Image (cartoon, rainbow, N blue to C red; front, side):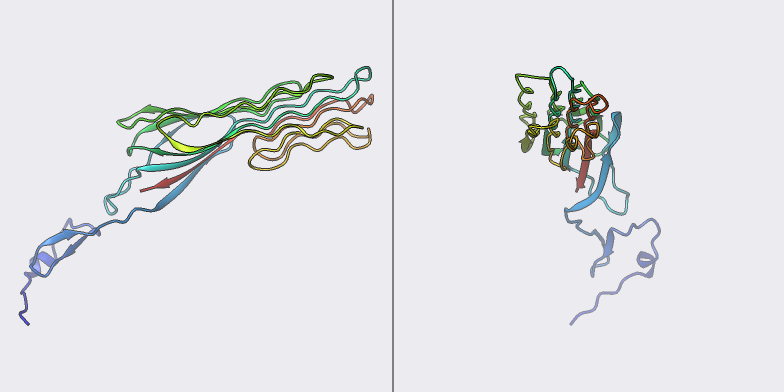
Length: 242
């Protein structure tokens, strides 16, 4: 078997990154970098932020090309109760979108997270919008939960989320509030969990939702228990892939 002599200067060459390897013929080649999961980014505060698609370091030349996005709007607030009309309904849960989008490193994306609705208010929409860079994709919209109501008819139907025609994904509507005949209704369940608990035996005010995007419960009809609960704040979770 023939042996190839390699110049020691090649082995000691400066400026060669860890992505290179020395072949038997004395030349350098690039190590193939396989695609796969690279990281997670989360946003759990209402309001807007700018997210920049990461550009991987020189030692790992494969940049981020895909994002798997989980985004949910803010949950709806319940309706306050009334001695005259009795119980308020809970707020509806926000919609959720799970979508894959194609991106280019250093693209910027504006993420708006919907606030949870206070008593008597609907939840805010959450959106995921391409802002700058050479990439492009359709805006994702996860609608906020509907507000609770006092009396009949009941709350409006949940709003359908928007995945975006250029994106691959699924739209999940938020849950309706539950019915509790003797007390205020509990809040609707979101993708992330349950809504605010119904007031108990006319002895407590309505409960706010703990889960992202879930609805707050309605208020009862007692003098000190009429206050409804607030909806849960929205959320955006991004999984980065190269």
